[in-house]
Image (tube, rainbow over all chains, first blue to last red; front, side, top):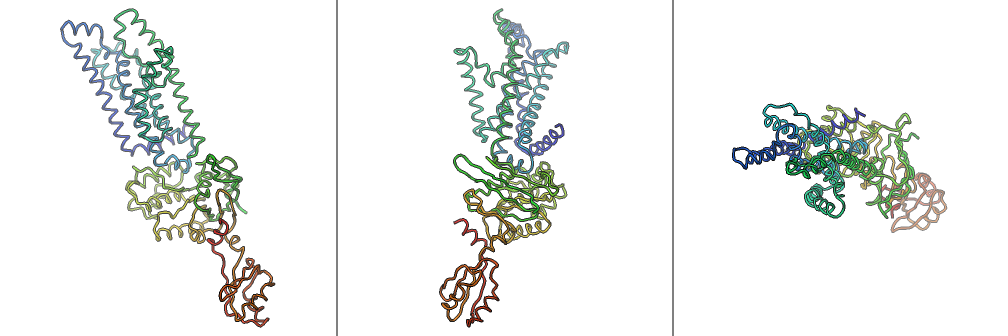
Length: 278
Length: 297
């Protein structure tokens, strides 16, 4: 089994290391994630650095979400908005195979259908690892530079790294499913952007209003709720504090459902690919 | 007979269209086996099922090694329909992927096969810059890599110039001489006749016939005869053993004979003994094309 995975990984690496879009998007991810956090941090610094009453008040309310241990959550939350960038890469890696019919050739050359999809699973895994590494380095840097050398509780919220990995893997798996089913990169990307940015938000809103918040089980929403927004607002009132604590308490439940959805996505892909004509 | 592939009762439908209907035949080891049929007869579907990229609704495909065991996939080189490669990669790197997946061929063999298929000079160019003929050659190179014991080729001469077609024909004959089993689908009947030892003929998904080309084409022979008195000649030949029918056509008598049953020198002697001197006596074996057209129309 391990030998098979190593063999498939080697072949996938041969495919992607020469793919220009791979290096371009990997580079864009490596630049855009830190750039976003730099921008968010600068908004925070503008609001809080200084001696005016307003800035002192802002600092008192906000605290420092970029210092340890909050940095892990804050930076995971802001970074998660950029999942569309690696999602483009994931979609291209699968739709290219369909476009050039190389999925068919891989099987003609002797791969089983399971080996082919395992290769794509490995691609998504590698991209997720890369995105998580970038997030980890950014969070480590901002946490270290905003904590005044205090590493005492630097690792108490380190579990957000794991949550960020699961969230990214899950959302990239949804992108993969779209590319896998729609087969054309443009259609899959258009549908992903429309669903992720418009349709699911509307459905979640409607479900909150009419359907007892059933929208929390929608594929992006369920994994979004694994990493809640930093809880500045919890300091305003007890109700808000309770609401925030409830959100945090539900993280394990949302993680469980995210894992279930992700597993279901890959089972669907393996099953469809093992039965269809290529 | 030593069989390398047994196709048993294969059926395949696409929705309401039945692409293959209960097709069964066997491919002898070491043969050059042509799968023939008009467009839409199910040739590529059959090859796709052999290579497991299409799922049959019924039936089985069994590849058998020399030792009588199920054949390992790395013994099988194949090229189906269109050359499928990664457009952003060079021909050389595409073959490295073929080699890594199939387990066929080494780096040295990749260079050798590219040289043999006249792609060595462009081996580092991106596949997307190749001409149609070069793409076709690369696909054949990928199929040949590592010298597999079985080759499956779908219209291997498509897109090649006459020189390229002759080279591929020679290559197929060389490989066949080395003992490689070659299964090829083609609609170029004269090509098939030149290289194939066995054929299966399909029409609208049904297998019309399969077997050795020699047997297939020995079913009937046509003899053209000419003499001063054609009517008398026709009368004496009507009862001759092995002759199925006679017909005067223009200045000669056309005789349909059962394949192999009639010897020309014996006919000549027989006519002479009965007082007829022949001015023409020629045997026309049916071409594969004639046989094919008779079977498919």
